[in-house]
Amino acid sequence: MDDDFICITCKQLALPGGETREGKLHLIIEDGVISAILDQEADLVKSARTHYYADIVTPGFVDIHHHGLSGADDLVQFWSNPAYTQQRLPKYGVTSFLASMVFPKDLQLHTVFNTLKILEGVVGKTGQGSTCEGIHAEGPIVNDFGGLPVGDNEMSMPEFKEILDAMPSCRIMTISPHVEAKSNYERIELLLERGIVPALGHDRVATEQEILGALRMKPSIQFHITHLFNVCNFHHRNPSLVNFGMTDRFPSIPGYEKLAPPTVEIIGDMFHVHPLAVSNLLSSRHFSQIAFVSDCTAEAIPNKKITYSDRNMRVTTDGKCLVIDGTTTLAGSCCSCLDAFKSLIKTFHIGIGKAAAMVSENPARIANLKGIGGVKVGNRADLVLFDDNLNLLKTFVCGQPVYEAKEPE
Image: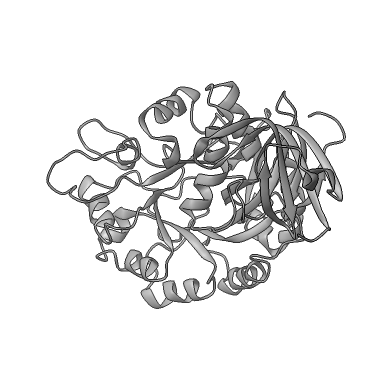
């Protein structure tokens, strides 16, 4: 082993699969990668160039639905300045993210393509803080835009391919089964061909058969559902997206053969989704099928005003959400994965290992991100250090400290 390595010692360690280990544990990090996990203070531990200590260590959080914290005058342009958000996310324990993009119909396409070009230039590059691992395209083929700016959900296949070609790092795309059924799911077929995860969402009217039609495009692939409960419906006789997202096993009835229930993501601010509904989800789905996301559209600065595709927006007085100014229409959250992690533990009494999985390992697996999201040998040393009260102390990316709290937060 190279002499230039560091050691992190902790009392509790969140491991893959929702497991935890307790005791005096030592993480050895070399060249930005976890090279060993030891439970004895061997000579290797004593000879570490630099040594850090914490009560709890978890993998760095992976936010697969994040619109940026700012960096431009309009929210649509936040990702034209990705460094602004990348440098701030480690404060919230986020070491990797997918940049969420929207495609407003009234926005000139060259502006969208310029932003995509900038994003593609930073994907996978470390050293700026949190690492952009790719893109989550929220639309444009969605039926119900909710708080999103209206896009062109009837664009032609050549136009759709042009957008996909401009973002080769697209990992997930939110797409509505109700819209897709009208074209025989040809766009979903294209997503599958390119290895992009189809995330069903923004659809209050999709029927059972329209959803099943999407899932049957490739039964061997597990689909995803974007921000479950939000901009989608539940009915006890007429299944919609929430019904599909609330079960771990489909019933043995015609049409469901060989299909796997989609994974789900849920906004973790406890406002977009009431804690009782969150509790229902945690009871009905295995934790490995759930990812908590921020759907962040602004930092939590109460009453801050911004524009979103030339519409006036305002952060709520409690700092939890962004709304269309003068209305109660939600246009995104102001929470972080750190907020969701703490809520899982303190509000829902989920163990640290499982809570960490739902903000780290599961999102990484859902988006097919390799080498991150779990504390194991060979993975990138993206880590979050806490004290016993879950105060975030330090955030590491590639084994380097990129954030250190001046005092408990």
